[in-house]
Length: 326
Image (cartoon, rainbow, N blue to C red; front, side, top):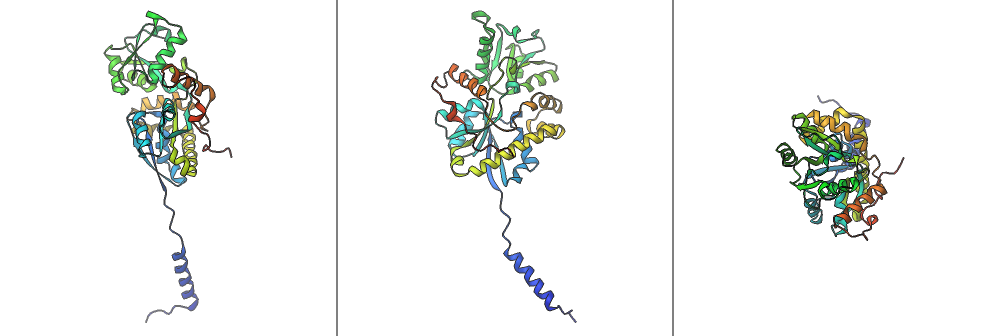
């Protein structure tokens, strides 16, 4: 004979069922498409850290990471509405001035220490003074790396035959490595990891990082589409809150950061660890833009004839969405 249920138990069961039916469904995470200008850049690793350790999920964001091969390709994507937020070089702020519907919303780093000059194993160079009259590999004419060779000439006051010579070879790290190994160039400007990779292969070394002669530069930046700025300001605030939380995590969790970054960047653990040690202190924790770094970037735009001297950098960025001090 089936057991009898008491009236009180029946009412309690009914109440519980009604309560369950009245509970709202868990709010779905908001999808956010984030593009990287280039996949193999240590400066963009906070995105992967934030995804792996649920820092974006904590802010109700579901990140779709999309990798590109250049800042110009990324600018096309944001113009087409294919991405919402982008991680790219500070020089891409010039795209905003030329009509690309984006604006810089937070700095990743204002230090050129992420970039360096590497030389081959046969090189006797010990300082930048030894690059007088030498051929230095750059990505392309009119690029930031091209300007950095010109800035070295300016700082050293090298003229005529003493000037270091930029040689455009493209931006792929394997191409940079090959150009140095074959003697096509005497040195190469790229990420500091290029020098570490050469050293690991016993084919060269890092000579200096770029902060040896350029102290501040708006190097890596997070951008948002103007559509996001107008329609989803709270989403941008949550994204940046999670981003800078990821940076804070990285600064206190070397082992976890190196392990993940090595997989994402496809670098050896040793090269990744050395890169971490070299650059981790230079990540911004608050995203604020530095006037001197912006002014140096503006100078590069003018030197390269990307923008004229009337360019107003204040129109190319906003700090409206940065985390507020608690």
